[in-house]
Image (cartoon, rainbow, N blue to C red; front, side, top):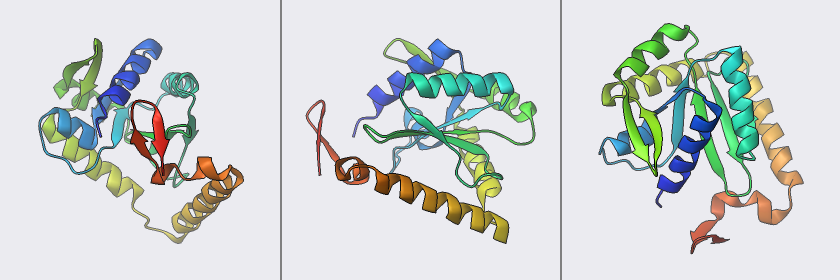
Length: 181
């Protein structure tokens, strides 16, 4: 699967809404030329009230919803669009803006379909994912209960959808716009 169209769409939306975000994770590693086995889109951003407003406007423009798994200790927001299964994680560092500044200082600008996108340096890609994984690790019973509650809510939500909408994980793209199971 070629994720470049989705990435170019996201770059355009980020630029239009002026949300400063740095691409991290496997997609960033792929842009640096590393072989990756999964295609997921993760961004690192500074969590401020202004950026949260921009993130909400970005989600509305993409016709997506913002989910917060593992609330309240999670350090990420997930944008999810039901019509095509697009999922984008926006991770932040709970320690403040200093880490974002350091990562953005080493990041490199890529251009996709005429849109500029800030991509983390290869060393920061690994550091960011390990750091967020530490923050998200279920360490307490309260976190486990909250995670289970969030999962049940997601299952209930998906079950409320018509069957053709709930099975996006099993769909496969055929042609330019069609999908099938």
